[in-house]
Image: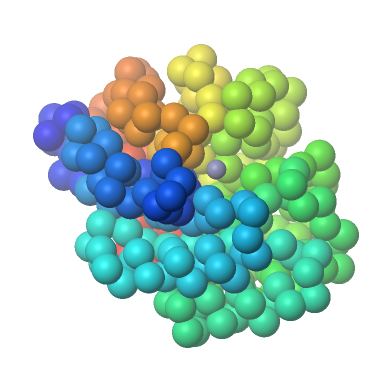
Length: 243
Ligand SMILES: [Zn+2]
């Protein structure tokens, strides 16, 4: 065990796609082993292809390695077909959540409502890479009974913007909203922990953009009991995905 007393570690933010890309399941499986990670939530890495291509691919990887991976869909909520694609991802492709990248795909509230509606209908969480409109998310979290995972502590990938983190912390005061740690350094994760509590944080690596061992180690370095580290490394996300 990497950290004493912790039985299971889940990486909640992993991109898989390939070959021929570098983010192939085999490569990540090796890193999982080195990092004592037992399970990972996986989603899109083929950005040059339609999202449906990735969703099918992710579903096939989960089918092949069901104990190791759990898949989230990725949709562009601006696309007319997005609600249907998400619905199919859940019912047909057996994906257990959805990732939205609102920095890549800024979306008007009306279109986001359609996605939240489906997430609520199927009781699946939404993982969100936030754009600039934090208020949208606040409104939607008041309207819908949906669990939200704010990727990268709300800062972005290696953006390390404390003002964005402060706004994400405000969002996470809602009991349905959680912050995922990838793309950040130790001081920002520690800051989030001190402003909130260990029930609100979730460990993610954002592989291939980080080695997952680095992300696990950040949690290990926090001044917390093993029991509280276990919340961030596994129990919080297990509860959200209902496993
Ligand atoms: Zn990512």
